[in-house]
Image (cartoon, rainbow, N blue to C red; front, top):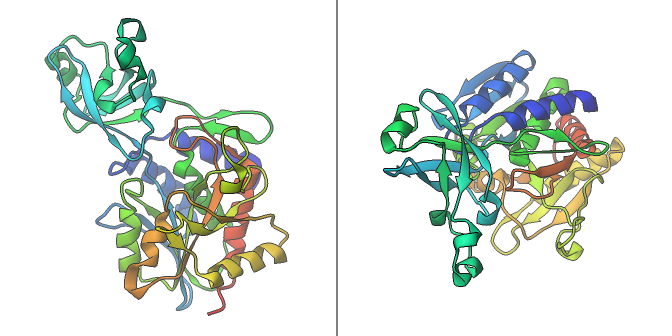
Length: 349
């Protein structure tokens, strides 16, 4: 897949909005992209979008989560200020002074995240950690009734208002690259994929709140093996000790042997070997990670049906779980090729 096509696809996915439990807009884009390239598409009761390329009895599940971290309206006070909860793992200082979009019943409403200005804080307050309870959303309203008239109610979902942008060379930035990058990887591979095996391409829901969609999909599909597509933290930016994150942006996709060591996922060595041999055969530059970061859908899939051999394939992404995540499109291009070519064969079990 050419870089120009990858860039256009990722821009569309990144700019779409869909927090955990409200992934419908993202699912529609994906369905439209992949429909000509698969034999069947369905949505299960959990909300996972499942595409099937029919083949023999060996079943390969490819999973990419659609959801992004976001916010949800919890309370609207008498002056029209909106309190909220976080959906997914936020580092609270990232939210200060961001613009947001509230996805109300009557359409999208812009807002800003506010807090008490530092000019009027006591010295002790300035030193305290930023808590979500001290932040609020301002949509310019003056009462509860005015906010509700806009179509904003308790339970309205909220996403960050940030557009995808190119940086230098093949580097880009945007919100929700975790995990619209994984979605783009799977879409790109599906468009050029030829395999004699049965492929389940699963665009999962609610990964950011507990890997839930992958768990239910893996149980119902009962694949023989699985690959989860996601992003991972590189060690090439200031403040990160390279020993703890020895993968780098621009040096290829990452096959993750260990994620969240001591409590997370251990990839089946045969799965890792399968991907390494594919990369070597086709001259695809890859990186191997033994990490101590977060889990992926592979962690949930691995525990289903008595154990499903699983491995993550990730793209290095700086500043994850922020509105300004950064990747190199060349890494994504390599990941698409690795995924596309791997499924021509199967692991040596």
